[in-house]
Image 1 (cartoon, rainbow, N blue to C red):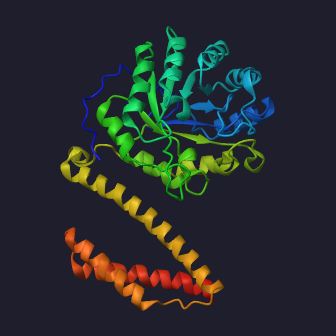
Image 2: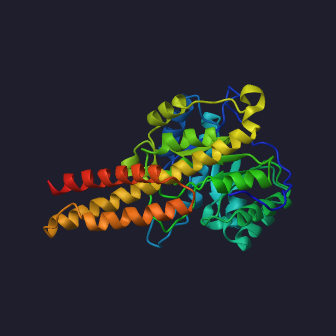
Image 3: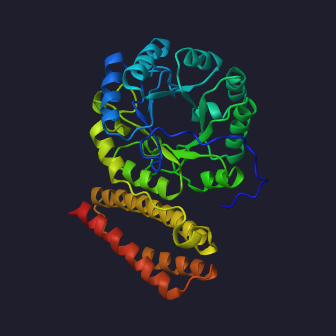
Length: 366
């Protein structure tokens, strides 16, 4: 997908990086939620010791889907954040969802604010935050709305920019989707690409924690984000993830965070005399996005094959149903040929799919 709207001019400076090595991206890390002063200080000290953190983050107010979930420690957590800042020298960041949050965060010397996905989807809420930010010298990051809507994301950024905020950036945290996926939120990399096309000067960072929803996929998405020329990462880190009060499954320990960051590759953005800007490089980037989607779809297909195998086992049905498979092959080949694909390729592809489905069902049956 290509963004076809007019480019949007947003006055902004790149969010400054405090790492000793300026070539490293912006790295924001810390717990999903502030739970205690001791917890915050422990995590902050351990993160600082990695020498790979720009800003320490913690959620003070947590907008939750259901009312009985932990909704954040509230204003009493802000002095804890302030103490982290004074004791470690790290800058601090938290999410704000209304004017009162902004005023309290600024009172306690919070250096960076972010607008969450639920809030950025509501222009009334974003405007309230923008009005409260007028005259403030603070960095502000805006997460993408929950649903994939580039114009809504741009609109939220415009409102913050018009409030006079110069240190402005965006966070890609993935999008809700009705389709089942290995990800908590679908990456849909084409949406931040559209934002980059509309606002070329705007720094965009990635939130792998919320895209993945689990720690296993965070390294893959982190590397992917850097390869997609995102300017940094926001990663959730907890000193005891299994006991975290919110989003326990997606939080790394400080030790695993350090291993992750030092394992990332920082590739040049201008290889071989700016080849990255060539038509070939752009076409390859499109293929990479499509390959990611194809692999996700294949995973979903094989999951369904497993469910079919379980049904066949419970109902004493044979694995191989040749009449159905012959119909599938004929229909898929006809459809593929109409779309310009060769019959030979389609037969090989369908045979591989069929064999893997049989393998999965056989393992379940036996």
